[in-house]
Every structure is written in structure tokens, then in C-alpha cells.
Image (cartoon, rainbow, N blue to C red):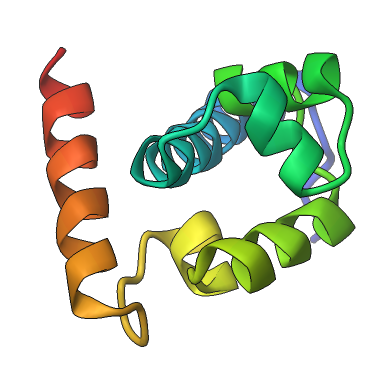
Length: 108
């Protein structure tokens, strides 16, 4: 017998999606911190509008995939870091700075 879908089945989903967006935003903020740029300058470096970037960094919206590819190309990080927190393939000094920022920002 097939189980019927209920609206209550989705109760956990928004929290998971919100958490995922927030984590991507935290990692974007870490990259910006390592680049020592303001939101405005960082957004310009990836050809994005500052208000859009602010929403991505705050976790209010998912980032544009093309903009994320520009983050990777222009700021020496990998897509897997932005989406999953994987430091593999990132230059050692950059990876250390990213990890330090994320550790401090998580405890704050």
C-alpha cells in the first residue's frame, strides 16, 4: 500500500534548507574575510549586486550558481567547500585562514 503525502511530512524540511543556506552564507563570509574585502567589494569581484550578495551571506537566499563559480575562480576555493565545507584542494594558507574564521564565527 502506498503511503499518502501529508503536509506535516515537510515539517523538518524548511529547517534543513535554512540551515544549508546559512552554512553556505557562513562559508561565503569566510572567503570574503580571507580576501579582506567589504561586502560591496566582494560582490563587485564576482559581478553581483551588493544587496543580493548580502542576502546570500546572511542565508536569506541561495547564491546564484554562476556567482559561486566566480567565487571559486577568483578567490581560490572550491565549490565543494562552499556547498559542503570540504577543504580538499584549497591552498594550505587559505584553508587555515578559512578554518580559523569558521571556528571563531561558529562560537560567536
